[in-house]
Structure formats: structure tokens, C-alpha cells
Length: 348
Image 1 (cartoon, rainbow, N blue to C red):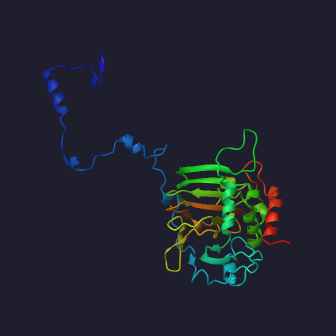
Image 2: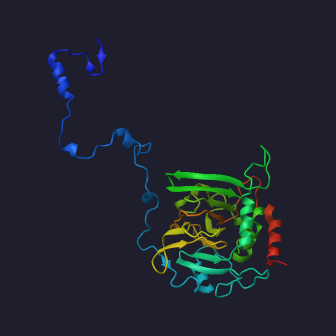
């Protein structure tokens, strides 16, 4: 007996034919008034390999617990004293701010540049802006060091030169729920000695705790959605947790492109957003001084109407060993940093 699609055997009687014909007629009912039900195949596209829906942004980045301390700056960001800023930082990274007066203005700029100015954007968790951290010329020098005019590779297999490593980012991780579309360059420490000299002499950051400086370019419409800067537990063996984020804007962006904090507010109640201004630095703290992550610092880089360029560096609990580019190390940059420190009149 031959098997057919309709079952085992084949009934060719008139009655069977009539039944088969009637069975093919569409039966209308209440279900016809409802939207069509998605097929099993289309529904499965939305499920993970275990048959479960993927986590949402709310799952990965849940709302902060009720009662979480969130204290906005209580007045204009330029009106806080150095004493107030130090107090806000007491549970986080111990910055050395001895080069600033009590109004948060840099006291000695013997090289004639515009003095830096501290501004407290948020009290708890602390978020600090530093105006004039880099001069316009210094911003250009950083860009040229990492992004040479020619993108042609200058090395062959087994050989490397003193050049940044370029990484194109266009990723979406269901685990992190973070979308990033940008181009990054991981720099040799020796390529950005002025940045490191200022971080050390002005803020008191120790060279061994500095992660590889990273320059990021966001073209029009590119972004980095909500994310934390903290280090995942499996990676804590190299330097421990990231205690501080130092981010410097290399160009001014008029529309969009700001660094936005989801849970932090300004004194007037709007979302805390730092708009890119060339040379200005933003500093916040992904973890407390004891290494516990501070989830209040969830943030994103919003889409910009124009290209946006930044240089950023993370500061660890303990000495950190650079991973890229090949041969990169803080020790190898000491000579360049010493020269930059002299040029900036930080050392004789």
C-alpha cells in the first residue's frame, strides 16, 4: 500500500471527494475578525536557543532600588567650592586637586594657557566637568597621533610600529543590551603624553593604574547606547575594577552627541547631559573606592548631528597591564611623559 500526503491509502469514492472538497472550504468565525496569529516559525525568531524571549533593556538595566541616594548639584555647577567637591568624592577615587584654588580654578599655568576649572555636575554619585583640560592644539595632536591621514597599514606580519590599533565597532550584544557604532583607536601611552601628564600632575592619577588610552570617532548618526563602565568579574585579575572614567571631548558638537546619565538629574530636574565642548573633560566613577560597582552611573553617548571625537581612559584599583597595541606599556612612555611635564611647567 502506498502512503500519500493525506494519510495511508487513497479513497477515490465520490463521497470522499465531496468530503475533501468541503474540508477545503474556509470556515469563518470570530477568529476572522482578529489579527492573524503569527506562525510558529515567525515566533521562534524572537526566542533564544532555549525558547525564551531575549532579555530587554529593563531586564539588563533594571531601575534603581527605591531609596537609592541620588543627590543633584544644588546650585550652578560653577558655584561649588573645592571643599564641596572633595566631600562629594570621599567614597570614590581619591583625586589630588592641590593645583586648584577653593573656587575650583587652576592656580598655576606658567605656559600661558587657559586655566582649568572644576565644575560639579552631580553630587551623589559625583560627576565632575573640567573645563580647558586640553587646549585646541593639544586636541588636534591627540587626534593626529591616533588617526593618521593615511589608513594604509604600515606593518607586516610579525612586525609593529608605534601606531594605534584601529577597531571598527558595530555591535549589539543581547547580554549587555548595548549598541555601539563607532571607530576606536587604542593608543600607545607614548602617543598621548600630554594627556597622561595632565592626568597625573593635575588629578593625581598614577601611571601604572591607567588603562590604554582610547580614541573614539562617532560619525553622524552613530551612538553608544546605555552601558556601565565597570569591568566584568572574570576580568578583574588585571588591575581590579575601574574606579574612574576620564573622557575628553576633542571637538565641539552643537546638536546631540552628549553623554547622558539615565538616573541623574540637573537642579531643574532634566536628565544630566554633558554636551561635547572641545578640550573639556568629564570625570565620573563606575565603582566605589573599595571596588564595588556603582550602578548609578549608567550612561550613553547619544547620536550626534555632526561627527564627534573623544579620548577616554579608565583608571583601575591596582597596576594594570596593557593588552594593545603590541608592546604597549606605561613604563615605555615615561620619557615622553617627562618631556611633556616639563613643557607644561609641571616639573623643572
